[in-house]
Image (tube, rainbow over all chains, first blue to last red; front, top):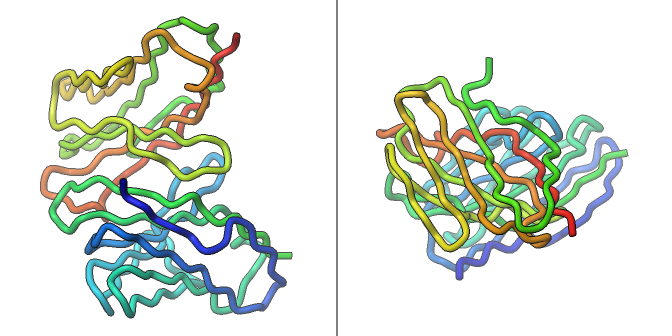
Amino acid sequence: DVKVTQSSRYLVKRTGEKVFLECVQDMDHENMFWYRQDPGLGLRLIYFSYDVKMKEKGDIPEGYSVSREKKERFSLILESASTNQTSMYLCASSFRRNNSPLHFGNGTRLTVT
Amino acid sequence: QKEVEQDPGPLSVPEGAIVSLNCTYSNSAFQYFMWYRQYSRKGPELLMYTYSSGNKEDGRFTAQVDKSSKYISLFIRDSQPSDSATYLCAMIPGTGTASKLTFGTGTRLQVTL
């Protein structure tokens, strides 16, 4: 079974803090993704990566950055957390081939106060 | 108008009922269709994956795609309380990569004893 592990289930941070969300997958997937999920808005893609050190902006990249130094690990960074970044953050991975389905982690519930 | 529309529910049914969950979409380029199940405080898990039109069955679950109507359905037979979750439809264009995956906002299903 594919395992996508997110390091924290719940995080509480203060406005202005730098926040790191970590994700590790064990299936040798080339693609990795960060989404946020909000009620009524569904899942929105923040950033994705199709290879080590490669990254592409998704639909809502503003206020976020990412890092992929190793194939199995993909980090999401909130440079200066704001209250509107309070959300559920979901990491996912997939094979590179087109139309390969995504496999998700269990999410990190981030609250910014 | 959203590319993918999904009734948020909640949909409440008695145990043993047949459940029908649906999504409509506007982009005729979508060729690959998925259903994800998301339990409370968990990440989405892939339930069904289909290509183009037609039906696919897996145990109590049947996925149906009608491309002429731009309409997809997930049927659950003999529903169980353990089926209580949010169901997300998702789709990718024929030439698209996983980064082009578009999700519905999810339908919350409650199966009661």
